[in-house]
Image (cartoon, rainbow, N blue to C red; front, top):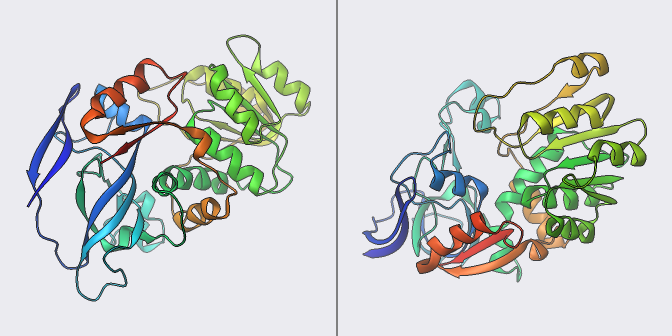
Length: 338
């Protein structure tokens, strides 16, 4: 059986090819992919700046699928719609045994280490599949994965109903964090970005104040909103200047959550952390957050629709990547529809 897939053979070399699709094995299902989102990490994979990418690879880890075939004994049935958690852990290391599979040193991610879902069909382990009830669109189901990233960051920050929050770099994950934080009663929320088009979306999603940091000093606007500083500051950029701004925006005893993965070593001034006794809590992937993310989307507390700007068929995937790179002011989340 042949299936059409996107294949990145090496950085900058993307082609649409037909490959043989293997038969399903025990505890596996064959999925017809209905929607797959392009993530910033996919762009890094294309550019050759992703630190963990293995080539050649089929990208795609934000997936909505429909079961075509399933191994015997599964709770799933053909025709059932699923969200896909794209992470596979070893299951035997100390992290996995402690209930922290996202810390597994052997963790593999579909679309990065292993072939992902930018394809007409794919085979996936059953324990990665989350059944979807109701009439959620395929777009919404594909957004469960990035929403789980946002949920995990909020849980790592220990957000409470009284938490004030600043977000530096208000792209897709930042927009989702705003909605998760609002659903949990947090506020006030400050959204910072270099693109006015993104900030307009953030206002509509619940940010109290938005700041274009190419036009005014975000730290000054933050001080006007929260004179004592913010309980939590999330850095979605991962650069020296954004981490410095995070330290400046955080209140004494506050928390900084670096969510973005820097693509090169960075220097950071430790003095503000010491003086203000700040807490740095990193956030990687998710752990028990998929069900929460799916519930938030199903309830409408998180609405991905304003974030999704474009749809492309599989055959135009190269154009979709180019649009995301060349026009970030227009393209936020692009969905490929195999």
